[in-house]
Length: 320
Ligand SMILES: [Zn+2]
Image (tube, rainbow, N blue to C red; front, side, top):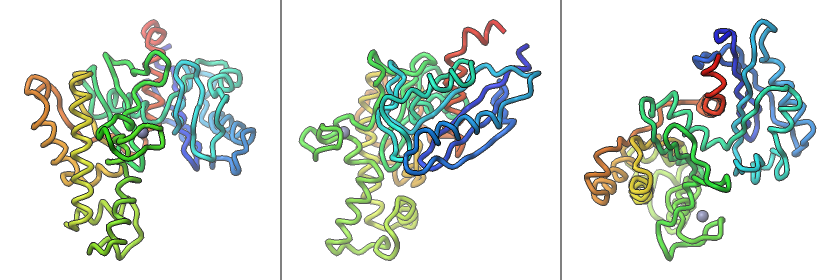
């Protein structure tokens, strides 16, 4: 029976619907990508989602154990609802789980992309062999996830583990969340690009002035030794380090994994981050935690959906 079990993983992005059929060893067997519906057409988006899954559905001789879905959204794990998603994707009151359960009659588990990537790194990537891991994603925005004893931490009301809104400066600038001085205001790609633009406007010399201002350009300039890019990225690294120290004291993780576009800057970001952790966290705490770069690439979201599905189905799978 076990050999014939298959798992469907879906990742929704701002522009695409990706569906993959996996074996229980996470080997992809079939893959399909469809464009996301235009104009936030919910019905069309759901039809395409259903169609994508049908096209990777296995032969009748194989059994689908369930469907896992990663959504780039603020996801309410208690109620199973998408609360805030990219413009292209339908929003509140939409329960993908209810829709897919009705359509396919198998167990369905939906989660937020960043949290599920944490589970993917834990199960298939940089966190293998540990039970407790924190993943911090440093892209345009900051997200991540917390894995405690092999399970995704989501909090009592289903909204826990949102790492971008930890306060790192008590009197810092206002954040879109309503708080001030959030990590996201100091270390996200959006924050860094805004600061780079302001510095260029003020006349600071930089290679960044010669190209469109994107995260990739910022990372490339830092690698080439551009002083402005390196200064901004080093500062982001220090603020990430401050947040990491708090999380290390709170959760005592064995691995701390950093992913996202800014992490491509490598040591320009990670060296100041490590220095802060060494400077501020007591040896008893920091010596038990490995700080690592994320190991998974483009399929991290799909593997996250698979990891979540496998985690939630654990009891049933063990009986097979
Ligand atoms: Zn905030």
